[in-house]
Length: 540
Image (cartoon, rainbow, N blue to C red):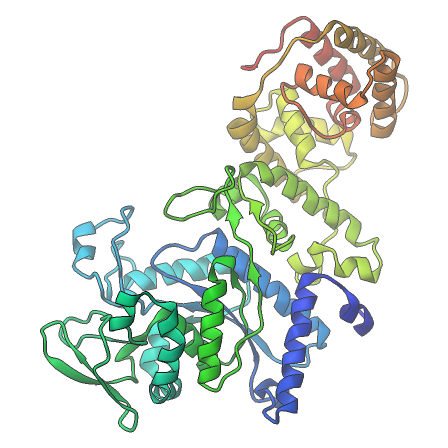
């Protein structure tokens, strides 16, 4: 769908707010008399995400690329694809190898390469030319699996090819300005030896954190003390040095002409410092924002080293990729728990947005996450059964495989079958896994109170006598509601909670009428009878 310019200018959807900031950036550059190369047809609007290849890509990597892609999509729509755009997935693979991860093979071999650029460290798995190449390949494989459009860029190749040379020479020329920005941010001991230039030792090949003893901007060289105590003069170009982290980020923005890059809240200060350095080099820092970091179930920040939270692989074992995209889209500046219990809710919210999209007006569609998740072309693929309902069905039917679930689904939703409904078929698989791993171990059935028992006996009788449409979830919900009212539950939520606790061993779930319609009126009556007879147990 093609949106009107007015709607895109007015929407409060955060990707469009970011896109409008990039358009404003282009206008400012035009007014300064330094038009962006993309506006003259000689370049592209550059979006960037960064990746440290000392480990495998993780859920933060996915989130940053997914969110940046959403901003890129909004910008392309807002400007009617007037400009060429590209997204750089930048691997900082020239960083020194700081420590040997304990989960890698060939530990002793790797220890011999500490301090060397990651691209000069052999691949411990023996499948690629270096450790960085192995992890870079995993990154590309990871991004490709989600269909992201990006250009992979290696830090090592960029330094060694000379693509950074002009910016490196400029940084050498403005060395004092960079130091004036950096030194106030450092501790006293660090200030004494700090230099933005990290030379690569010609004798050991290691990335050295040593002071710059002399510098010659005209020759493009610096002098430093090598590991053997000898003074060495080296060029700052051609991959002979690596720049320290914050100046390196600024160097990248300047050399690659980055227009947009977001970063985590933990990098707010780094972003400010790098922006100052970028300006000192004569560049304009990119647009972007600082997103909130995910927390684990205890509210603690997720850490790769701690292993708390969940991985992309974990998520995709129990939920669709689209549900993960939705979780990243919603409120990126708000801290959110990232644990297994958010997957069912995110899955059902995704399908709710998808079901609503094709009946919405333009303004609502611009605020619907599925437009961003599906690159502007959401499918009409909302299943007739929610993930939460499937979880309850697995519980009630004690289903160990999806064929059991399909027996109920095919009876409930006319024409539904695994072949024609692959998304729903996948949901069945996810539901069984999720139930077995997270729901079943925590199920706790309880005995009903006297009033609850009487109400459930009444409900069983009414279901056995029910002559209405067995698939009408609304009518069944009304029937269940009436039973609770007739038995004088002061708060009817307590009645529905009792049904879930007594019949399914959990305290909440989707509308119970929807569950009855899917599970079957007769089977629900039988389930109530079994519960009242004490036949349901936590291990059932």
